[in-house]
Length: 255
Length: 264
Image (cartoon, rainbow over all chains, first blue to last red; front, top):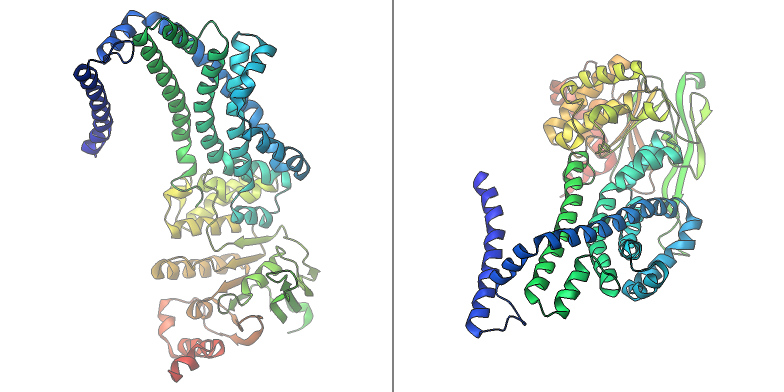
């Protein structure tokens, strides 16, 4: 068991180390210019030299992503409840939701910037926009796919529609809510960065653009690593919630 | 048997389902089932898969509507699930996010009687089925037999006058299944609950029942009524007596399995 856990921790680290080594060897062997691809050590130097900047700009991007996600969650779950609970609302809004999804939301970003300005609000709005859909759709899917035998139980004990919803359908949908959230939180980071790319004077996305324009490629790479850390961190937070709920659901979704 | 003595009456019950395609003829699941049973009796509905015995059980439970005929329990027509019915499903059907105790109390919670007395009764029942140490466990921590015992407690917690069981032990291994059958007989002896029990196991039907109703293949019809008249308390030794074997043989002949075997 312990050996297994060690292997499971060490192998990904080894994979990463191999990638960095290959990167280094490639740059050294072919004498790649720094402006094209800096050595890993230079990126590390840049991270150390600029860490305050990366952390403070990263914090802004983190907040934009997180707030966008939370807003998507806070609005998406009730909407999913509404469309799963009402045939009328479902017919009214579900096709609209699907249509919205097929629209590349990046295309809306310039408009949102005009509406909300270049501050935090526009980034949050774009993050919200991309995170909203997976939460609504997965939650609604979960609410609609309550195992039939649970609904049979509800019938047998004469549960009201309201009781069936809150005591059976909603808790049974929670694993779906979480899987939607996992997708949504990753998308929220992308949304925030897109917002920063299009118009902003702060955040890691902005810093990345600045570094690029100054051909400070090591700093650009440092920003990328910062973004990866934010994305992984937020995803891990949702995964931790899922893990905490695991005893609730057992190995399978239902027994 | 006089009409007054009957606890449950099935009067020419029939059920049809819409055909598989538009314009296809309806599928007749049950045809002309008439039967009556007394309070405290245990009736087995025995038949091949798809013979409509589960449909009949659900009709008695008020979970499925009849197409023809009527069902009366204690003189009142059944049109929906009743408060004093307990239902045990084929799968344990425990809600995975609730503890075992909270699952058992679920029906009480629904009717708004989840009080101290209900909890006391739930714990007594869990104790009776040997699950008191697992009251706070989650369903996924239980074996199949334990889950089904918890499900039995859930059906019993409101103190039902009629217990309806849909092949509840079908998914269990042989030994667990025999244990569960004895447990059911014990519970029924203590509570005096009337039980309707669906099974496709000949020996289970005979072992448990006061009367076995043997069903034909679809459309389901009662082709034999076998009053077992076996002594109580029943135990495993009974399974090896000539009278038990004779009853099994008769039920098997009704289902056609005994004759088929002799012919091959």
